[in-house]
Structure formats: structure tokens, C-alpha cells
Amino acid sequence: MFIKRTFDLIASFLGLLILLPVLLVIAILIKVRMPGPVFFIQDRVGRNGRLFKMVKFRTMKLYHDGSSVSVKGESRITPLGAKLRKYKLDELPELWNVLKGDMSLVGPRPDVPGYADILKGNNRLILSLRPGITGVASLKYANEEEVLALQEDPIRYNKEVIYPDKVRINLKYLEKQSLWLDLRIIFCTIFSRDLKGFD
Image (cartoon, rainbow, N blue to C red):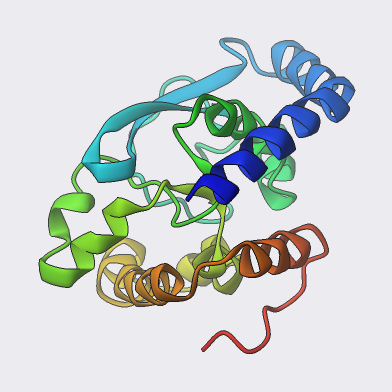
């Protein structure tokens, strides 16, 4: 959608420009408090199933064993990283991915390779969308790490409960997507509000 992409270009450019001082401060804090690289770069599944390199601020220790499912309070997340994740500041570098065209401001969160393979039939229509920094599913599961921390088997709960619900929500977004809906989602994301009238 031309209008959506144009909006993404303008908003991501202005966002990077305005937030540059914040990005620099966070980068310096990570470098000082967390030995190793500032950024966490990982392959994610993009539009039409193409892989791209997603950029985030690093929030975890350099050497750890673990899945792509994160749980609040786990030892691989550093104290600084926990604060960045709490306020979603670790995701600010993804504005660069939006500017490049890998992502959109609003859309389904990009999955790691493997999860997209689970999608079957009409569910694969989600891959026709550019993945987003935020989205309806992101708003509903803003406290996902806290929810998973309460489960006996977080990985299984994510696979059997959360992920299927996200797929359902993202399919509904695909049907209803519009610039007005995107603006509402961005507003709700920034001000931690619930999105009314979507379901």
C-alpha cells in the first residue's frame, strides 16, 4: 500500500532524527555496563517469507543458552536490559529496518525462522504483510513476558495459546488494515492504551 509505505518512510526518518540523542545515550549505557556489542542483530522472517536482519539494542548477556521465547526475570537478561525491555526502548533501532523497507511501523511482529513454517493454509496470508514494530497483537500481549513467567511450561504455552491467538489477531488486521487503524495503534502503543473496537 503506497500510502502506508510513504507514511512509514516519513515517520521512521523523523523518528530516528528526533530520537537520535536518546539512541546515543542508550548505546553508551550498553557499552559501559554490558561488555560486547551494542546491537543485537538477528535473522527474522519478513514480507513474503524473505529473511532480513532485524536490529535491536542488546538486552541479554553475550553467552547464554535459551529459546526465542523470553520470560520476565530470567538470568540471561541484564539489569539494564530489563529496563530497556520494560519500556520497549530496545526496539527503537527497528526504525532503521522500517526506513530500509524490511519492516513497517505497524504489522505482525517478525518471527524467527521456524515459526513461519508452522503457518498453514490461509494463516500464511500474514506473510504478505511487512512485519511491524507494533501491532494489535503487540498491544494485547504487551505484558507477554510476565504472562509467560507465570506458566509452568512457557514455551509450550506460547506455542499452544499465545502464538495461535496472535495469528488470529494478525489475520483480522490484514482484513481491516488502514492508515487510520495504524494511527490508532501507534497512539495506543505510545500511551499504553487499549485498542477499542477491533475485535
